[in-house]
Image 1 (cartoon, rainbow, N blue to C red):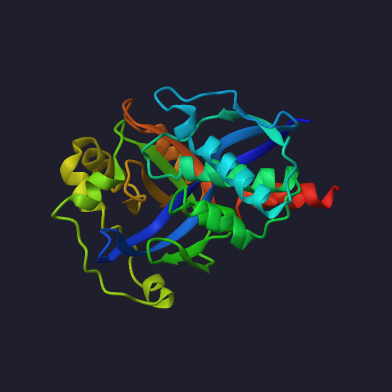
Image 2 (cartoon, one colour):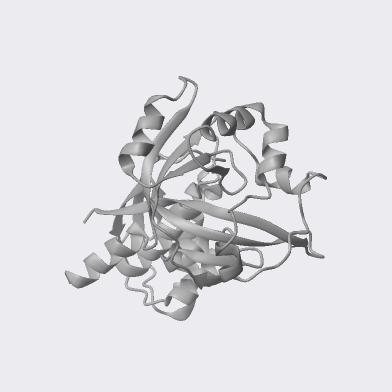
Length: 289
């Protein structure tokens, strides 16, 4: 039985770096919201005892692919709990829309979808908290995708508080470059001392991304794209980039600006969602069984 699962994009509506930890990682405050746009995974549970990725990514060995790693991590955890037969396996096909290194959470979202979907399909019975504990080892953003609700995140992104930001329309654009997160976090010009504030305080302030100035300095195309978008609407970098987004009150306003985009800009229009499409899919499947 083939099942189809969404792996939605996310935006960081704001991102503040509040300090550097002794282990080299950075503490942050950020606001995650999902988009009604993203990758799609077709997952077929079987009794092969193997995880088969039908659509390998160029340049990414299967053993390093977050999709395969997530499935194997769930298998290992559930088998140790005695809630998974040894022969449980799956074939997975990915329709990839989200760019790698774009700051939209594509890899983390794919991993989260695999964990949520196989937990349901294999009937392993793990809780959201248990899935998140597996997910955080795969990537800092994986737990928010597993939780499935817009969230205010602190720490390295693992401390989540549900949030209800306005569900606006966004023009999301990619400048044609890929940004490696470690490179930005190593940059000496990165702001690392933003004051720690409550979510209520942050929601009353203009939203900002502390990584944006470094991304604009290091990548001319990011700077050019943001300069262009800012002529039409409030615009920011998402995550550590390279994608940027502009916010609009209506879909038509966003699409009108996208139609004006220079040819070198690749973009799409999507609605911000506080409830993830993944959770909607899971709820629908549970309701039908």
